[in-house]
Amino acid sequence: MPTVSIIVPCYNVDRYVDECIESVVRQPYERLEILAVDDGSRDDTVPKLRRWAEADPRVVVIEQPNAGAGAARNRGIARARGDYLLFLDADDYLAQGAVGKLVAEAEKTRADITMGARVKFNARTSYVSPTHTFEQYRPGVTAAEFPAVFAVIAIHGKLFRASFVHKYHLAFQETLGQEDFAFSYIAYHRARRITVIPDAVYHYRKRGGSGDSLTQSRLKIPTLVGRFVQIETTLALAYGVDGKRTTPHRRPFRTEFGKRLMRHVVKLRRAPDDATTAEALDMIATFSYPYRREIERYCPEDVFAVYKAVWRRDLPKVRAALKRLAAARVEAKPAANAL
Image 1 (cartoon, one colour):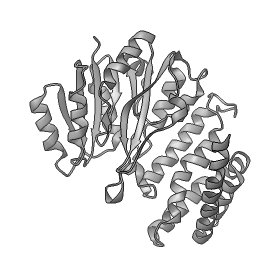
Image 2: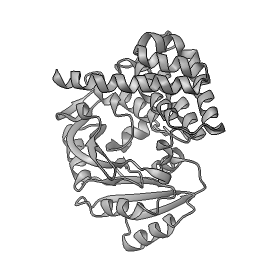
Image 3: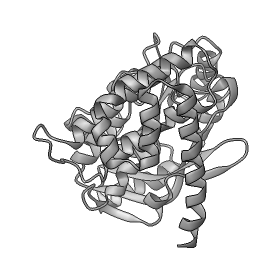
Image 4: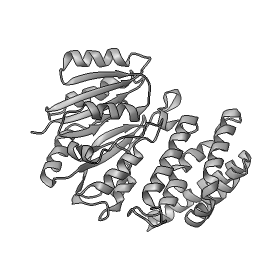
């Protein structure tokens, strides 16, 4: 049986790390190397990790100064000795039997990447996201044959053949946020076989309140900078120097500005009227304005209206445009369900 190296970047997650590591050590699949890379935590994360390492020799604790999740994952890749690599965030957990299912499919289909459904959850609800990608079993496809894999750019729930990762020198961007986008895009382009299974293998925690994770604190400067880097990297991968598309991913400008950057813009609606909000608004405006023609061409009219208000740095008008956008989307849902 092949060995799986599970790389767990950790940063101030003492509330969640026990549940995370327990979900790994209790996997029926036992040939595991569990690399917990602590990224300069200041709480009780490291003591808890050390207790796990004392109890189970498969758990290895690696410590480094704070450098971000990308740097922590890269440290894990350099240390890993497994035939497969799987990345798990320390505030999430694996479904029971997830590793065995992913390895079995990877071996059967000889896939470079094997991916299962990710369940997002909080205290109130849980759901598979995105549902359309995992509606059915797809063994050994390419990204060109099944472009819906590009809807799953986050690293969660994916098993990578280690030789594939090393062959193409895949690594994470060492920015604070959205560090997995370039990794996944390049991996999809290079993979000869991608296997998609409908089984839920990964549980992704959507934190709330003061305990928001970095990627969920949408208006913080490091998160915005990470998003900007991600968008520029993604567009560079989607279009060649001649301006022609190099990826089967559909509507990249609509995806990047109508969805991904918009996740940050919508937080302006209820953000406080203070200097931090004003700075976030200015950063979003400065970054998106050079793409105004693409946003107008590829994004819906109500999305473009939001960006026009953003470019004016007019927060009341941004909020009014976001309110109209939200109302339009609510009205569109019953019509879509009727179809």
